[in-house]
Length: 279
Figure 1 (cartoon, rainbow, N blue to C red):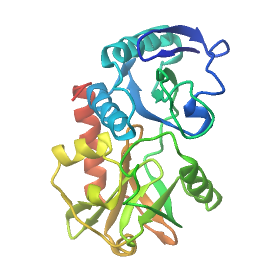
Figure 2 (cartoon, one colour):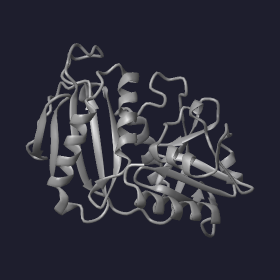
Figure 3 (cartoon, rainbow, N blue to C red):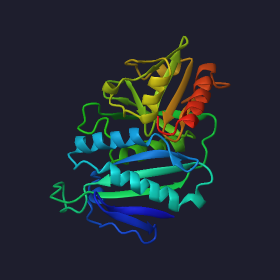
Figure 4 (spheres, one colour):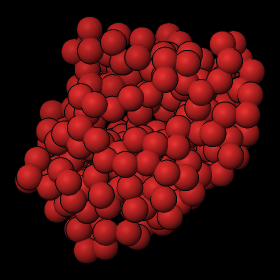
């Protein structure tokens, strides 16, 4: 596997076994970094412009130097071209941008940010999925609320709990007990034929797929109690690699089959995404 490693301005392709990043990189020592995950289909990265806009917004929120988007686009192209024999099917591309080499501790210093672009094959998701709620919460008032940071320890723990309970994703409330998001997904519920999703004020991430769903379908952003999951007619989650993913189990509640609205939205989203690689 070939990956692109460098700093904000300059880098090169190397094999994953030869890639070098300092153990004093702030992304390693204190998780001072941001990232984007893009779906790769047919050798192309989907919705790259939207992902790069969000990367820039995350960098500003973190106080990082703005990433050079031209450098990143070129790096993505090089990585996809170099790894094309390995990407016969779906793939997952990740752009990671960290605080760079810095002193030990929280001070960032004057380091030049580190940039890494990598890709790997992605096993197709099944047509349906299962989720569980977990006891931990998102802090909607956190300095990093809504920022796609590399600080994912909470997500690792929550997802581990979900896997222990036989589910593919963990759903979290915020500190007010409102439905927020999954560890790597946004959440949607369907009630009486209407589709709802939590607003960004809940503390959830402004997912790229979430934004496309809001643009392409009739969806209402609304504050929802976590308990809505037990009474909704249908539930689905979304992410860059899952697209629209219908849920057939929430905790102990099981649906015999996927609902008609989420099924139709999944099909229509796939059709529109296939027709336009960078919507």
